[in-house]
Amino acid sequence: MSEFLTSIHPAAVCFIVCAAKIIEITIQSLKTCMMVKGQKLKAAGLGFLECVVWGLVISTIIGTLGDNLLLLAFYCLGYAAGLFLGATLESKIALGTSSLQLIANVGNTQKIIEYLKANSRGYTVFEGQGSTDRMNMIFIVLPRRDSAPLLKEIRAICQNNVFVVVDDVNKYAGGYGMLK
Image (cartoon, rainbow, N blue to C red; front, side, top):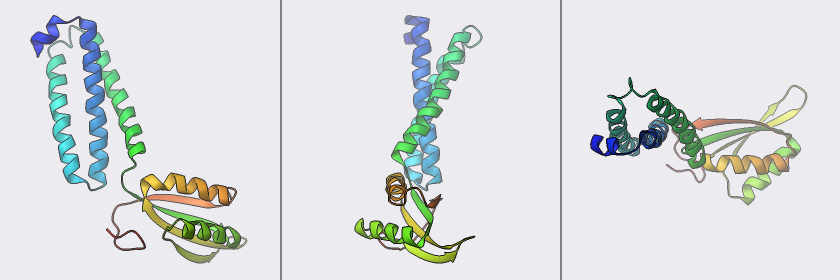
């Protein structure tokens, strides 16, 4: 590997190191998210791949850092870009499950329930009292990738007159359409 890198232009080595670091840190970000979501086998596979890339990158730069600060700069740039890319990819993949707690007045609760029924979504409604009015809390558990589109529709139905809390769910069992 070192013979190959010494045969190419130093600027090209900087870009190779940067690209490899982006890949490594992106993998690391996704691996961490999978570990948190309980996907141990996938996380282990990504961890192995991450170590392979890390070993190649670090063996490339470790002997030359004192001589080539530009290489260090590209290494750091790759790290930062990898963090950004990993977080962006994870939000697009949207691993895991979310719980939504919607607090709405009685009229908006009926609109939300009609929408949820029409879209075959499970929910539970709790009646309550707000500071000035009767309110209801609608509790929904769904795949995380579905939560943003659902919230967009519900906000439109209620003309943004709904209070929303979104949480990540680690474990659950049973429920309408949610057996796991």
